[in-house]
Each structure stands twice: as structure tokens, then as C-alpha cells.
Length: 184
Image 1 (cartoon, helix red, strand yellow):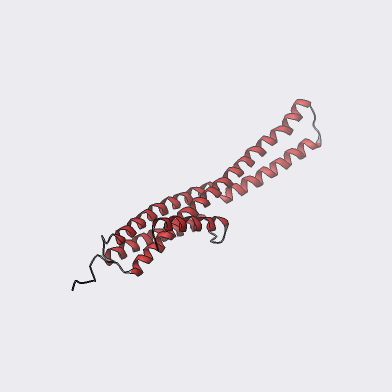
Image 2 (spheres, rainbow, N blue to C red):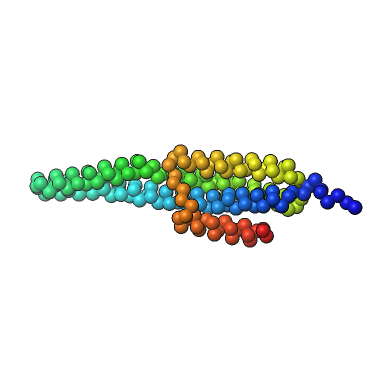
């Protein structure tokens, strides 16, 4: 009777763990891309507000210069625009939205590469091209990469909310994509 414990077979538990980690990587890729897009929109909005307020300061000054009016309203208007411009500049600087967008997008790209490698690992398991030890080693390496990448976002102040609309959308898309590729 042939030995049913072929060295190329991987346990169902390991296959399931690879699939779950693959799902997690697919989810993280989609979520961080959506998060990066959200931060980029915020960055652009605050840039627009800064430019608009900067241009808005020119109007009262130009009216005063060209009309020869030196009314109190000119000083008040310039002061108000100046305060608003300062507030917008501070929010933009403190929010650091461009950097957050860049980091989130970079994390999404790393997660995409890890997801691709995990799909390759899952295929190798399904085709019985690797054994349990190799599958576990590959899983551990990719799991470490994903964890270090996603935790790196904390340092730049990226807020992750696993219950927001982006999270739900990323979850649906990741699950649908993987289920279309693999039977669970």
C-alpha cells in the first residue's frame, strides 16, 4: 500500500492559514489604497483652500489701492483672511496629508506584492509542489512582511478604522476576488 503522507502534501490547516493570510493581504492592499486616496483628496482640498485664501487676500488690498479707499473694512478683511489662511495652513501642516497618502499607497503596493506571493504559495500548495516545512516558512516570511508594513503606518499617524465604509468595501472586494480564484 502506498504511503499517503507524501512529502509534498501540506496540511489543510496550513493551506487554510495561507488562504486567510492571502485574504488579509488582499484586504490590506485595497484598504490602504482607499485610505491613500482619501488622504490625497484631503491634501488637495487643503491646498485649494490655502491657494484660495491667499488669492482672497489680494482682493481687499487691490480694492484699497486702486480705489484709494483706506476704510476700516479693508484692514478687517485682510485680518480675517490672514487668520483664516493661518488656520488652514496649520491644519494642512499638522494633518500631513500628502505624507500619509504616500505612505498608505506604498503600504498598499507592498501588500499587493505579498498577496501575489501568497497566491503563488497557495498555488504551489494546491499543485503539491512544496511540503509543509516550505509552506510554513513562506507563510512566516510573508506574514512578518505584512505585519511590519501595516504597523509602520502608525508612526506617521495613519488612523485605521476596520469598521468604516472603506474597510467594508475592501473586505467585500478582497473576499470576492479570492473566492473567484480559489474554492475554499
